[in-house]
Amino acid sequence: MQFSRNFYAELKTSSGRLATEVLVNPLDGAVQIEYGPAMMWNTDYGMYHGDPGRVRVPAAQARSIAQQWLRSQGTGLTAGEPDSFPGYYTLHTLKSGKITGMLSVNATTGQVWYHNWHGTFVSMSGG
View 1 (tube, one colour):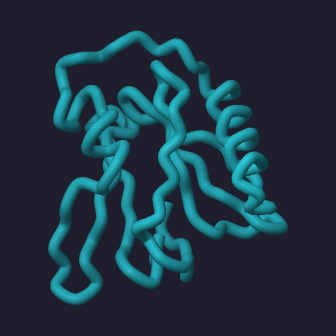
View 2 (spheres, rainbow, N blue to C red; view 1 turned 60 degrees about the vertical axis):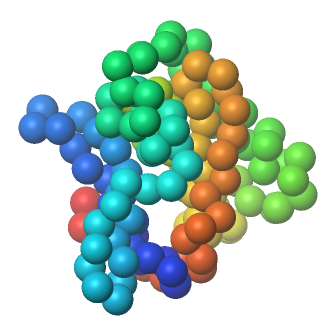
C-alpha cells in the first residue's frame, strides 16, 4: 500500500500466515517493523514476542470494536475486514467503500490503535 509518508506491506510466514507489518521509506527503501501494534502487540515478532496472551477477541468482534471506535470519534469512516496478525487485527478504514487508512484492535484487550503515521492513502498494489 502506498501512502503519502511511506509504503506499507504485510509479511507472511512460509506457511502463508500473516506474520507482521512493515514500513518502507520511499526515499531510501529502508524497511522497518511498523510502529504501534506490530511493535508492541505482535506476540511472535514484536517487543513482547513469546508472550502469546489469550485471544479473547475474535475477528468479527474486532471489526465491531473498530466500527464502534470510528463512530465514537465522529470520523464518518467504516471498518473493513480484519487481517489477523499474532496478537492483534489490522483493518482498513473506509469512506464510501474506499480505503482511507487503517487501525488495529488488540486480540486480548480489544484496545484500538489508529495508524496515524501513514499520511494520505495513495494506492494499493500486489496481493
